[in-house]
Amino acid sequence: MTRLPEPLTLTAPHGEGSVLSYGAHAMSWAPEGHEPVLWVSSRAATETGRAIRGGVPVCFPWFGPGRTGEMTPAHGFARITEWHLDEQGQDDAGNAFASFSLTPQDVSEQLRESFPYEFSATLRMTVGSALCLDLRVTNTGDETFEIEEALHTYLSVGDATRVRVHGLDGVTYHDKVTGEQRTQSGDLTITGETDAVFAHRGEVRVLDPALGRTLVVSKEGSDSTVVWNPWQDKAVGMSDFADDEWQRMLCVEAGNVMGSPVRLAAGESHVLVQSIEVEPLAEDDAAPQG
Image (cartoon, rainbow, N blue to C red; front, side, top):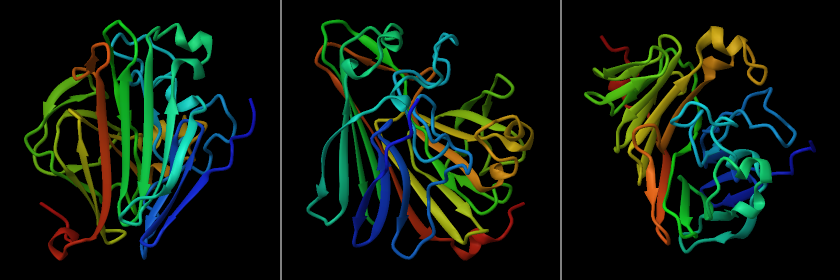
């Protein structure tokens, strides 16, 4: 293992962020005048060969242990592989961007055995007043394949126990903690270990009274929304997670996982997009519910 490369800083008039070529991993973003939006653990890995706890890991070509429950490494090989920086600059709106690419030739032979297909993946990160992550996967071979994918976004929150996730009311989900299928009622709150995969295509709003802001998470090309917080006991057992850090983070992830994989025939592409914006917390949203 070697030390991680230095992150690339992206600076625009209305926001700033950073991204690593290792994993095409977004490490930070803050719009002008706001606190950081992405969370990174104080104990996150600093060497290659390990996943980074925080920011936005790219989960591909499977999620978790895959649909068979047997795939390793967890969440696929994309987040622990060096990507190529193809382009960086400013777009017509003045936002800063960087684009990275990954092909099977970049992946170790051992890891490729678990996904023996020809593909190309590109990740474009754009920063300004909003953060946009655009993941495109193309089948460059002759054989049809299926993938799972997710933009495993770690959001920085003031107090996870006070956060409410709006936009999931009435949505069915798989509770990975209990193994049960459930239907969400009202806003989602964090009252214990949370690991839920929602069959959901829409926008969610993370209402954060401790920081006085709302994080608006929107997406395209995604049939799954994943919400995760390890809570106290699980955090204590994780070497790359300080014992009390669960209180200051919440994962809200755009993806296509479990029952919603992406099937790509030869020559086909799929694009997964997640955007985040910051809004002031409305006065009505600052009051406790119930």
